[in-house]
Image (cartoon, rainbow, N blue to C red; front, side, top):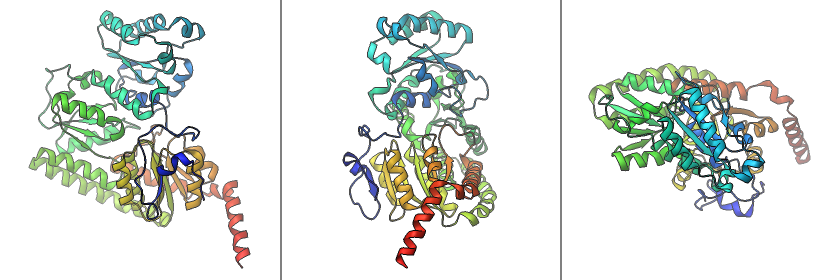
Length: 459
């Protein structure tokens, strides 16, 4: 039986056994070593793919470790986002303030790289020493003539989800700047798609084949100018609902743009995302194009998945990801491979999200909110999972238990969105789960020995 901290008992539910509503959207329990990241991390995740902006971290150099080359967001043009800049605050700066250092860093970086905007990320120490970042940014903006935007992402003041909100407030300041550049009639913005391994390009190609124009992608392969005219698109399509629904709501209130939430992962959710957009425009040609696209892609994909399914049928999986929409898609995608999800959870799910997870999972499935490594590994072992899907923080958990792992977070280098992405996903799951290396894992050997002894005692 997995031990759960008393304060977390309402955040862990077994379908079919527990009837309470799962608790979520609250600060992590002290001592639970949450898998969640901090506010600063959340803001960086969202804004990082804007490739023609300077991203300056105002704080100690250690915070900059969570930036350079860690994320897999690609750019079709400038790659300024791949450089990591920090004001590198030291002891004297903490005592006397870091405003002069911030001003000097901004002037030097903007002069050297000629960006179209600059973001200044406030880290924990800035919240403690009280630098007036707003004033410094306003002064530099006036002097250099580009947006210089403070991102209030002091890590200690909330969770990763609060970082998403800080990023949305920052990027919202770039909208509404361009009322001149033409925007086609059937235009959408994609929100919360970060172009990991080029996924934005896959999705844009689908929309192009449908006859729909993507006015801007916020923030994958992002450009400051495109965001400036995003307010004139007809629809906002929110891919990562946890991070960008807040921005969609702000744009709906100010510019009157409606929004829908979608997922580009797996066959059903990818197809539904395209149909939802097509039906919004109520155009016969777009609807016909969408039907043809979906039929063509699915017919190509299904026979290939069948080959992987032969080896994966009956295997079990655990899923722990940042956003719950991705978790929904993983449960469905694994079914296409003949696999059952036995443990599933997220860092930022809402009550409605967890209700939906209960609907689409089998009896006995463990559903977790804001879990920790001990809980997660305990349930993975208890349920006998053969695979864990997660991010960089979950990878060592899987390897220590001697089971397969699939990286489905921002660090990955392979596209998993769209129909092509589903095939990549199936290939990666198959390769990992069927790898012969696991039979040499100490954890697997110990588990097999324990099972053998237990069997002998029964005899």
